[in-house]
Image 1 (cartoon, rainbow, N blue to C red):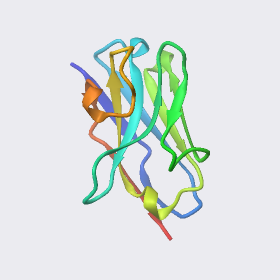
Image 2: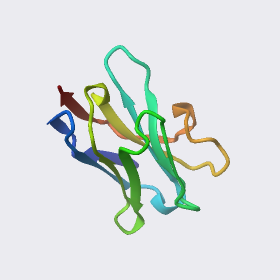
Image 3: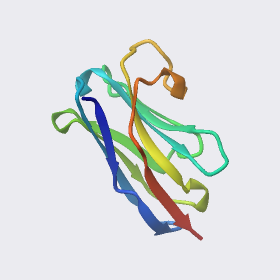
Image 4: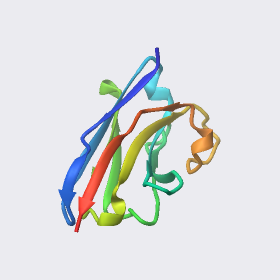
Length: 125
């Protein structure tokens, strides 16, 4: 049974840091591109960051570039999102996602095969 389980969310003041984790099971994690998306109340789900399985190349939304870092540990079937210099506008539910395709672009949630339930991140000013 496929599962993606996020952890590490919470409440933090602006300027603080959090590290999210997403542990996968039930599929070949090493062969999947992994990503983080977020959704704030009343807004569309938006791409945050992704990492390709073949090259470990990473990609970021402009809004988080230089502040967030995505990484993966295939031995632990886990993808991480290190979030620094957090801002109130980063407040959202953060979900991890897995994509099997090696040719699709990484920014559209429609192209992902598996999703986690999400973890809440709240940044206060």
